Image 1 (cartoon, rainbow, N blue to C red):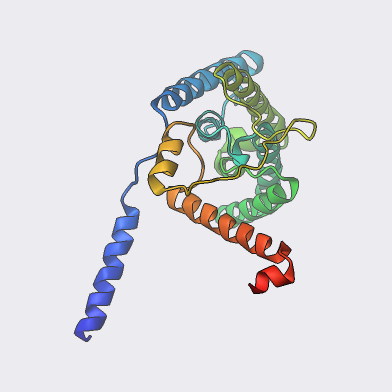
Image 2 (tube, rainbow, N blue to C red):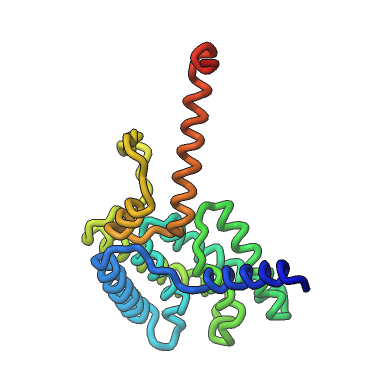
Length: 248
């Protein structure tokens, strides 16, 4: 290998390793405390209520709820963390997982099929929820206690856990001053377009992110998105200019 090619590969490797290094999360300390406290309370209360309703002899709580709590309380503004996402996504995944476990005796194949179908259906129903993938796998790999439940697994504990945690997220996030569910309703007033008289620097963007809730987007990607939006806006303005003015 020639020296220029070796230097190129070395630089590529260094870049890859640098990307793997964990970057700081721009989020206010207050939001970290709220997210941690909310997830702990939400999981505790959901577990207690499910145990009280289902009893000790039944499967009353499933591990994917821990991942759901991270989203609902840590990233409540994410489209993946809305009430319909956790309830609809987990139900879809539960049905898909149970069906795959019944129809496909080979567990590795059943896991792949269940995850693939669940993701496609969740996209279609607008309820994509990452922890739901674990819900589908639990239906296949959860052992005899899960297999004996059959489709009853979808109702209890999956639906019960999901509804309870979603309701607690609605209550807690609103008490903490967060808008949740996050999307605005059609009847609500949407934010007016903002005309910026000054350019936004990287430091401005970083400070704004640090002062609010954690966004489910990388800071570099957000900066590129803002730059692309500015390019589109400029192109739209040029298209609306009269021909003579454009020529000048």
